[in-house]
Image (cartoon, rainbow, N blue to C red; front, side, top):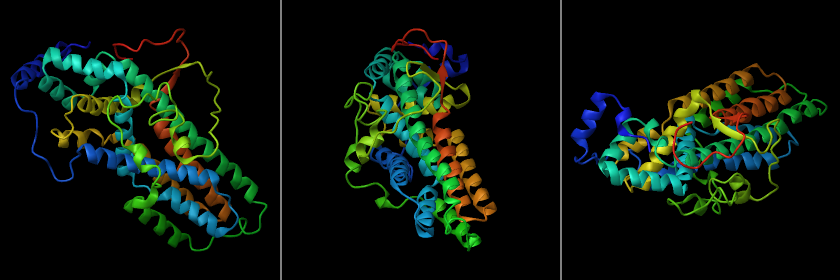
Length: 349
């Protein structure tokens, strides 16, 4: 278990000063509660649901292309970021080793001390006993979700080339300015409430240790979850990385996993509702948000430069899908030096 003594002397003294204090802050307007975390997750579920729809869509005419553009563009960068971090937090809270490690730390250091530690320094959370198991689950999920999105991106980019042979797609796309204004507006507003199918909603409500995504890939957080909730064929992951390879944290994006683990720690201690402002801050990961924002800006720029309709299909695949999938998958990178399974207990990467 990672000791609080690794912190600076100033932080340690401050911690001792608040260890027995009340950590619950007054609720702020718009702050996250347990219910709000589930609401946040729906924004990520909406994007994955649209990925499912785009996978099944065939470009037959200009209207179907415009509909696909609207579908991929209708996601707000802030909501999508918060939704993905909240989704990851719920996944980490399914790790038996991690939940036990958090609770053991609370029993040893004091519940309030651990709550304070994970909220002021999210990196503390993954260092608790069991943090490696939770991290492995998060890396597996991110890699699978990324591969799923990128597989659909491949489809649209390949489709863009084949569409060049169709008269309607090889024509100049009229109304470029109006189209750009429309997709920008959709991105500001975010996906509508009905973007998540009714049959998916109930499967987004999870509590700590209620599921086993490591052993059942079709449940929340599992590698095939988004395919399972929407039906259809499973996405086959095509990668040069061997299936048996271990994954490790990309240090430049590890903060997202820290934030997921910190919120999961609060869930394990039943402390979400009493630390609402901290949870709201934790799920707003700035690096992930910046990555998604850049993908959207690239989409707008690509569409601004597109002249023919088939070029917009390419923009959709490259920036509306591939770049977003890359943002998600960037937290993980293959660890080709791993020769044996990583233990599910203790230590940081």
